[in-house]
Length: 341
Ligand SMILES: NC(=O)c1ccc[n+]([C@@H]2O[C@H](COP(=O)([O-])OP(=O)(O)OC[C@H]3O[C@@H](n4cnc5c(N)ncnc54)[C@H](O)[C@@H]3O)[C@@H](O)[C@H]2O)c1
Ligand SMILES: [Zn+2]
Ligand SMILES: [Zn+2]
Image (cartoon, rainbow, N blue to C red; front, side):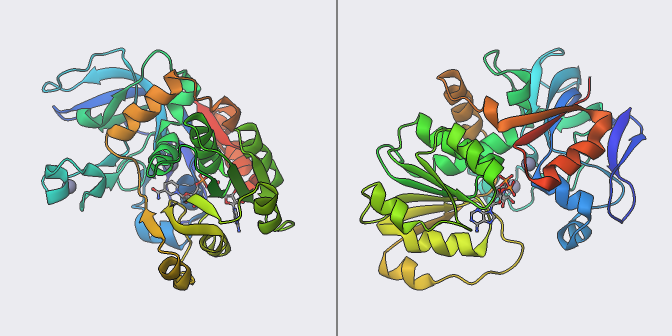
């Protein structure tokens, strides 16, 4: 089968012919139809310090995908060949305390598809049956291919009650734009989104932001004044990983406000904790998706009218992966889909 492989410990990815993966009795073999590129894949492509430390070489990469069940292991129940599926890429141990408590997203021993186990940028991928998500008919193939990042956005956006609240989203990448669409869908009041990239700010505006702000050009304060927000934002969703964005958020929050942090800084950063203390802020880190509550929530929101179509901006055949990675690297894009059919 074809697979996009981190074949050598150096920058780049290589489309190669490799053995189709074998599967155990509780796993399924999935024929991959569509995949989408994540920032993580870009780190692996560039071979940055994180990738050098984390990625076993050779490795088939990729974790955002949808496809169809091709074969099932002998002990799999509740799934059938031909079902349209996506899947949770965090494979949890099942025996740590958090797993046993049903809090799989806090597993101590999880491994990740396309990071520490063979990935989905290939004609076939193997997944434990319990990680498979059967895609309901109301979700189209492109959207099904981005359920993993939509799940990050959903997990973060639903962490706190945003109904009727003023929400600040820092970072209008694909996940920030998806979160914008979600909080708008579920009834936030003002949704202000910041970035330093015009393409992405336009994407957030199309997703329903009240105001978008290029923080390299414009201050947040006048916009807050204009919107009548004298006391600050009620809810913050940090989706950039930029140190200055986190500090700007701490500064712009109301007393007693709540912040969910999803963006991953590239190293240690300096924050003014006085804002957290004197304003009594609640700050929550977010990792991955709740397994599987997030998947059911986002599926239901897509059924009730959540539309993220405009955040999927590019579609290319898998053999043009080089062009696709250039588009993601350039940043004038939302989600970029690779088609494996
Ligand atoms: N915690 C998790 O489980 C998890 C999962 C997936 C992604 N992430 C992280 O979430 C973030 C969002 O993901 P994405 O795929 O949309 O990433 P992305 O890199 O495409 O988007 C980040 C955006 O932040 C913008 N930005 C940079 N500096 C800024 C600033 N000072 N103020 C406001 N915006 C600024 C960038 O221009 C970019 O558009 C990334 O940091 C990613 O690493 C975390
Ligand atoms: Zn991803
Ligand atoms: Zn565990």
